[in-house]
Structure formats: structure tokens, C-alpha cells
Length: 142
Image (tube, rainbow, N blue to C red; front, top):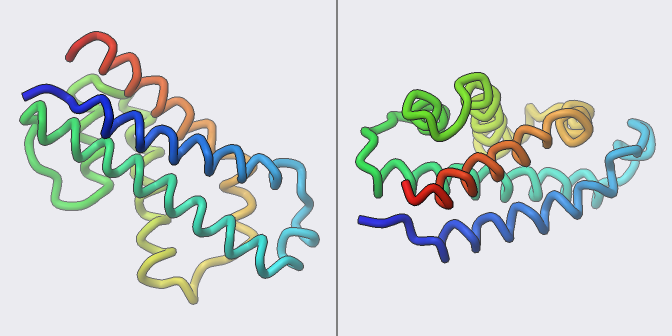
């Protein structure tokens, strides 16, 4: 079975739209960010969509290439790292992003909104690195 490029491209498009939106917060100070309920909520949802798309891409590649089975979302990125689709250290960092996704979805009352801003300002480069690795993998015809 081949990787469905339309699936990958549609997920990458969603990631890009959300990254562009989150760029608005790159130089926002904490007080301004935390003072905007709408901004905080929109940022959380964008992070959630980005993470879900990364998980969907990982799931698609793992399934199509019969790479095994992960028991949790974090494990999907570890599988991609073990199989050389992404670097192992990136897999670890994306696993942390998957953990944050679980916090947003299941323990939303425990989310520290200052941490959301920190993630936006310091950890989205990992998502861009993931995008590049996926494109390289697909372009190699893997």
C-alpha cells in the first residue's frame, strides 16, 4: 500500500494554517496573552489541531508501512523515530506534545495558560521539523 499524498497534504495544510495563526503570539507578553480569554482559547484549539494532524500523519504512515502498533499517541512518534522517519530526539519532543494534547482534551481544567504561551513561543519549531521530515519521507517514495 502507498502513502496517500492527499491525506498527508491536507493535514500539512491544516498544520500550516494553525502555525500561521499562532505566529501572532510569538512576541506577545504573558500578561497580554493571559488577559485575552478568546486568544488563549483559540491558541489552545490551534495547538490541539496541530497535534491531532501530526498524530493522524503518524498513524497513516505507520499503518501504510506496517511499522507496528503503538499503544498511545506518544508511541506513534517513537515508532517513527525507530523506523528512521524522524529523528529520535524529535520523536521524544513530539511525544511530549502528544502528552500535552491529552492534558488539553482530558484535563483541560489543569492547563496552565502560561505554559500554552511558552509552547507557542518555543516548541512549534518541532512541528515544522516534523513537517519537513514527513515531506522528505514521502518524496523518497518510502
